[in-house]
Image 1 (tube, rainbow, N blue to C red):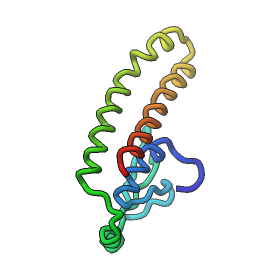
Image 2: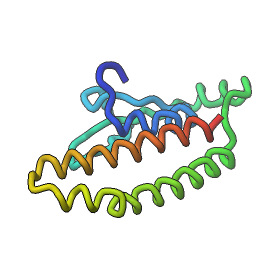
Image 3: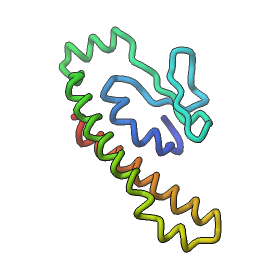
Image 4: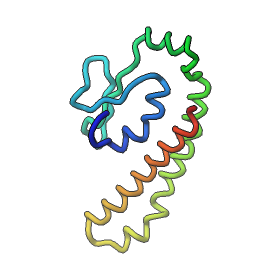
Length: 128
């Protein structure tokens, strides 16, 4: 995906690459692509690999095993769940002290971006 990258694209890019797919911009999505939304709006598209490319990667030995991907996703999702569930505890005092709605949104947005960044790091480390 070229240009400014969406946080969701950055977070799931290692997984997408591991399955041989590609992230595409929302405007480049075509029939057969998978569109992922963020706050109700198309954020990114996932273009799946064709079977010929998949077979070539299998022969080259560059295709990851399903078990390895499942294990990495399980670990990453468990850590992400804990990270997201702890956001209220971490920011409660900050948000309680704010009267400005935009400041509250900025605090929460920062925490969610940190969670997505952590997911990206986990997936890069776990899917190799």
